[in-house]
Amino acid sequence: MAVPFTYHAKAQSTFKPPLIANENAFLGDVISSDKDNAEKPISCGFYRLEKGTPLVYTYTYDEMKIILEGQFEIADETGQKVTASPGDVFYFPKGAKITFTTETYGLAFYTGQRAEGAA
Image 1 (cartoon, rainbow, N blue to C red):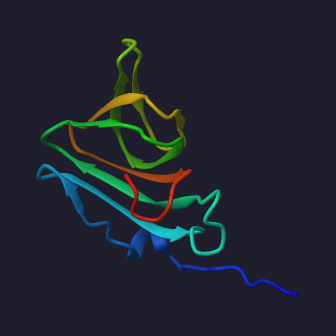
Image 2 (spheres, one colour; image 1 turned 60 degrees about the vertical axis):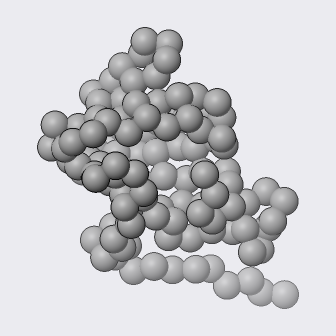
């Protein structure tokens, strides 16, 4: 039995993630596999942070991000801190407490091992 793929044309430029925290943190899932594979779902979408309040987030699932535009300062509780630029890839394991900040803005694509909209 053939299974079709899902396609979202120009998602990076057309998908506008909703505000999720503070006045400047936006995140939204574009696609999720939770309806097809409820036992091991993955979701992906875009995260945008604008200058302002840092976002501190503790991951309840594993996630990977690739920086697409702008710049982020990304720090964890171990003291590790990176200035992230387009092309950089990150893995955030479940339990990691991460602080995201930016002097301008940053846009990232993420894939997380979770159901759509789950935090």
